[in-house]
Every structure is written in structure tokens, then in C-alpha cells.
Length: 135
Image 1: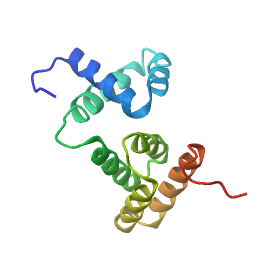
Image 2 (image 1 turned 45 degrees about the vertical axis):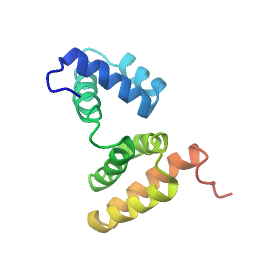
Image 3 (image 1 turned 135 degrees about the vertical axis):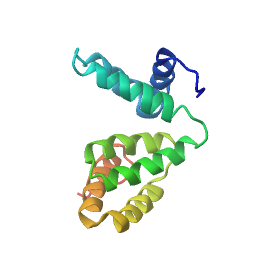
Image 4 (image 1 turned 180 degrees about the vertical axis):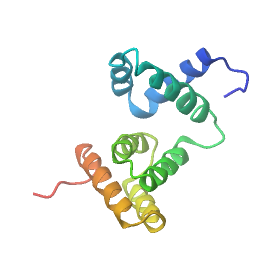
């Protein structure tokens, strides 16, 4: 990401990054479902988070995904954990690495945060066929 990018360039870069990490179907649905009120959020998250943040190639995407899972665990953000587990798998983070990240974050964030994160991640990993479901 270049510091002199316009908001339009940040949005375009962010949209590209967001689609690659989270999947075009999810991103396009989020944007098409936005109304006049929520479109402001779509812009800020696409421009700042995905254009400015994820557009900076200093850290690889895999590392960013790993950091996100740890931070989202600490913040008790299970809906975002679900989303970013999918992104982490897309970015090459293994199931074992996800488990280790969540365990490490649990140590620093507490058992309730870790429990919430493990439940959310397990649900998504089962849906993706990455972790077998118990009969």
C-alpha cells in the first residue's frame, strides 16, 4: 500500500484483498445487502482494514490471519472468529496452528474467551470438513 493512495484506490485494493481472503460470495453479499446507513461501515472496513491494513505487504497474509484470531479471541468476537477462521484456512493456516493460536490466546485472555473462540472455530472447521463431526 502506498501512503498517497486515494480513498477509491484503497477501496479497490481492499475489495480485492477482502474477496481473496474471505471469499467473493461473502463479500459481495455483504456489500449488496448494505443500505444507506450500513454502507458507511462497508466503506470504512474495506478501505481501512482491507485496503490500508491488509494492503500493506510487510506481514504475510498467514501472519495477519494468525494475529486476527488471537486478537478476536481476546475481544470475545465469536462471529468475527468464524469469519476469520475461514480466511485463515484460505491463507494457509493449518488446523493445528489455529488450535495453538487459540490455546495461546486463552492463556492471556482467559478461559471464557478461549471457550467462546474454540466453539466458534470448531463450528466453522466442521462445516469446512477440516475437523470431523462427532456422531
